Length: 168
Image (tube, rainbow, N blue to C red; front, side):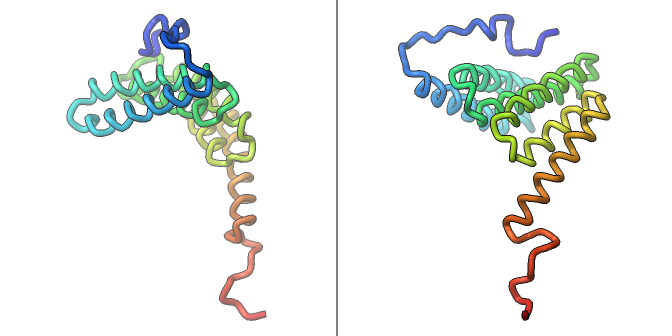
């Protein structure tokens, strides 16, 4: 299965001697810039936008490879795979579900780095849903709801919080 990221994706070489944190940030920033370009082109030239999203995915992969403890790059890579899965799905490709499963696995890795992130858990659930893995999707959705509900209560927005305007 080709994910559209090129055959030598994992074999990318750094051409300059930079520190891992410099490399991480440079790849992350380049990926973000490519995503911004792709979003601008998407309405008029989806094929070109998809190429840019794939190039961004490669940059996020390199950023994640440079620092595997950074959740942002891990999740940006998952998002790149989600975009590719969605594009495959739009084409009616039989590989779409496989790509959604890969995106779910990558999003899980990002979640492992920030296990309190309910939105990330919901993203994992969405990926599993589109991958056709209903039980996994439901489990991640429950986890996401639990985390988001807990965060809302901590922020004073849950059901158990008092209204600021209420009288005691």
